[in-house]
Image (cartoon, rainbow, N blue to C red; front, side, top):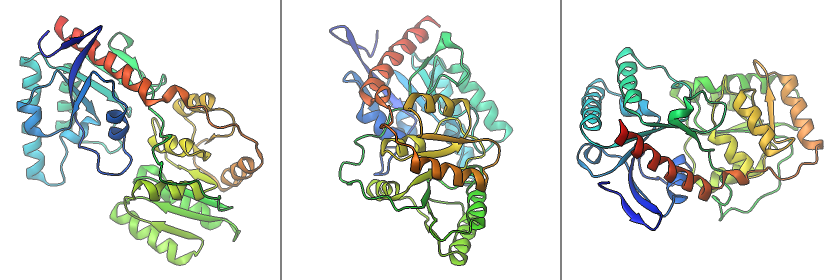
Amino acid sequence: MLGLTRLGMSMTVEVLLSLAPPDGTTKFVDQLTEGKHVDTQYRYFSWRTALLGRYQVFHVHWPEQLVRAPGALTQIVKRILFRLLLLRFKLSGIAVVRTLHNLQPHEEGDSVERRLLGKLDAATQLNIRLNAATPMDESTGVTILHGHYIGRYPGVEPTDVRVGRLLYFGLIRPYKGVERLLDIFQSIQDDTKTLRVVGRPTPELRSLIEAVCEQDERVSARLQFVPDDVLASEIYASELVVLPYKEMHNSGAILVALSLARPVLAPRSPTNELLAEEVGPGWVNMFDGDLSEAKLLAVLEEVRSLQRNPPKLSGRDWGVVGRQHHAAYLRAIELRKAS
């Protein structure tokens, strides 16, 4: 087949990711490319490469990013380019693979976006889900678990836990429930508890968090993207990582915390129930409905008192993930050839 080189029983596959190159902060793309199979060759996204470059597989993540832009003119241009990309897929032998990170985009798009992404779905040969709870047509899909982050922070030594330290980290958006966490924490009358918020917020949430920090000296924040070593230090210092999302499907943040052996409190979901069973007791603690003060304090006491074995994450080794992705690309190429 054009573009595939036989190496023993394997084949070299050229894959264009819909992702930008690594930027020094922990992202899915870092682990995916560093753990790749020897016969997988990755290229990073640019519109020039997408429309004119040589590759056999287009691997799309968070497809809404391909058709969204902060300015109206830029968005129009991106959507024209996206239509040209769809045309290239139709006229060429390029296979399309999509990783299903979320059931729906966290922030809803307009009707034009929905139509364009529907056309991308129709052009997709193979879907990859990151957990068995994601609904998927298994005849055109595979399950590949999200890899762990063990060994990702080799330059950071584990530090002593700051007793009573609660941590939220990651992007700060309305759907992630940080406002609720701030309200709950302020209602706790206990000077031995502290709350740390780390991540880049929207302008509105920045103002809210900064105001709370001024009002309550127990609350502190670092409102920006942080380097890996800083993030690891923040996690190591926490007694409990709190992710008060209004809903959660897949979360890299949970896996980062677990990889650094810190327990997590997160919303109950089919995905989190599977993860809790996988890693063992005491690591993934869940709340139902809205997070409450009582639940937060109860989980904090539980993680202090429970003797836990290290979280079981061996099934998420990135070497395994890389081999599974390579096999998925080969399958997608065969499906494209047969279509």
